[in-house]
Image 1 (cartoon, helix red, strand yellow):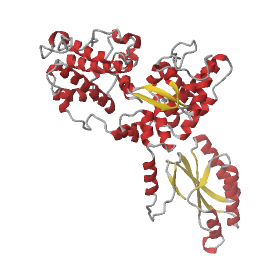
Image 2 (cartoon, one colour; image 1 turned 30 degrees about the vertical axis):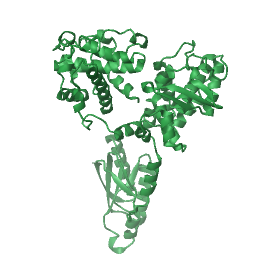
Image 3 (cartoon, one colour; image 1 turned 45 degrees about the vertical axis):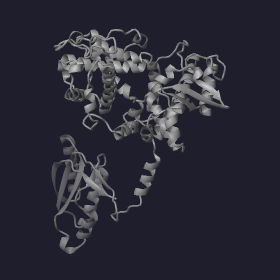
Image 4 (spheres, helix red, strand yellow; image 1 turned 30 degrees about the horizontal axis):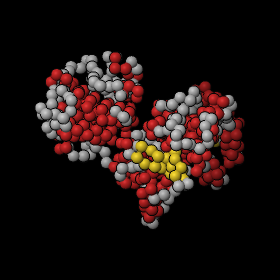
Length: 524
């Protein structure tokens, strides 16, 4: 998941419609009911230097000056607004200090606070349905992840540097805080976080199968299928961020030197161009024809790449919904409670960016090219998606050996059972024949309807002993472990056993008991 999206999930109640972002001129902090404010930032704060280079009389106005640098980038503005508001609220309700009064220790306390906020600062998602007007509104819904705290650190570092450079603040205490594992993630953590969201081959196959099998019973369904397929192709082949899909028009597709390219302005306003795959171009043509446009994009076509059924521009949330719905359908290919089904139900657009990078590496594309295609600022970020070294490591480790033979042991769990012990004395002249007929009557008749097994005796050994002179007249013992029986059924069985013994002239003694469950180990 995109870093900003993870932070947004922890602070979902500050969502501001993109159309309203440019109209924000005054920064207002929400009121936290049941909490006592310790300071009024608008009244207690002021520029440190008289010749401050920004028009700001207090901390709220100073932060707004910094935020306005990003007013042309809606996603960045909204993300930075959420994080700076959280710091300002913490200053008001927890620390009771202005920005100029914050020391390095204060910021360390703030980041520790984000990782373990008190319950009074958190609210459930359900209680936030009425927005900030509700008395139950709180800035957080739970602790921020380590990587989300890292993002917050970077945003606030930018803010503090700006305020120092503009001579609103004298110094930036955040520079004294080192990136350490107590609250900042390493590249390895980011790597494993991304790997957990990387689709396996069968999971990606399920997604593609779902896209192919979408219904086409009417015009609406056909339109949804064409749009969904184009969206997935766009995200997969170009590795776009979701806001890049909504921010660009068809004019981003340009034909240069007999090749199609997608020209993109991405994160931080960084420009780039991505080669267009031939298969993606087929989806482009199909979707544009459906929209009653020319098959190939034109440089003067400034209409949105993805549109709703009514042909209006589609929003980021709608793209999320399309991807989520396809993930939910694909999850049904696997058992409902399986890990794969659960994973696919969480599918998001950014997962396809991860998948694109991973599959580019598996296709043998050079790492430097993947970096350009994904527009990573650092080659270390691109290395997260590289599999070649891991594959070689796995192959190399197989050269080790261990001269211990593994044997499979299966633990068979048993249920509560009834143990029936039988003692036979006296009997007919040919006791061996009488015993054999008695056993057959038990196993083929009396216990025929029940699950049973012989318990601690061997029929063949007893028959052999009865044929010898010294054992001919000794007591015969046998026992059966039977599925747990109620009193009525057990009495019926005991009567039947007694009758079978009498028929064969044996004196029959029957002892029953309940056997507790015991696990049996079967070695293969």
